[in-house]
Length: 79
Image (cartoon, rainbow, N blue to C red; front, side, top):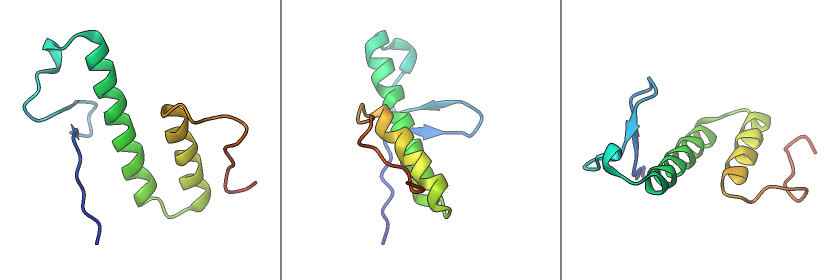
């Protein structure tokens, strides 16, 4: 059983946010951190939905890069 628990929402048209949070009122650093969280959740959803292992691997590498865990130790599915 997969339980989805996202902190952020997206309408699929580029708009996103966090329920109950006025993003425009946040300081730039807080906004940037929340945007990074939004991107991590988006990538995690995309990885979960992806059926092609190579595409899933590419998405995972992108997520690892976002987390700062990139480099020569990260391998793609085709390696």
